Structure formats: structure tokens, C-alpha cells
Image 1 (cartoon, helix red, strand yellow):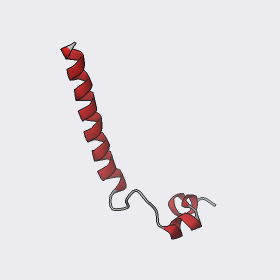
Image 2 (cartoon, rainbow, N blue to C red):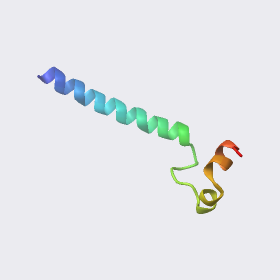
Image 3 (spheres, helix red, strand yellow):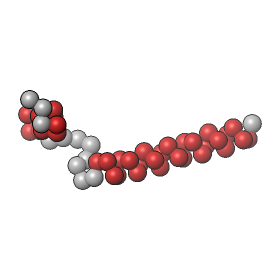
Length: 51
């Protein structure tokens, strides 16, 4: 039973740290939200240059 608890705890810690690192590297200085102007123009056009 204790081995399972340790495994679950290690998995939670690992996924939390990995998610935080991915957020830091992937998003950089952009942040999680877009501005109102970017949202009104459309994210596909601004981010991916889709027409």
C-alpha cells in the first residue's frame, strides 16, 4: 500500500513540475491570455497566418 502512495505522490509532483516547465518554455513572455484586439481580429489569422 505504501508503495502505491509513494508512486501516486511522485507522479503528482512530476506532472506538476513538468507542466510548469512546459508553461515557462512554451509561453515565454506571451502569457496565457490574448488582448481584446487580438481576439477581435481572430487568433487563426494572428498566430498561424491562416486566411
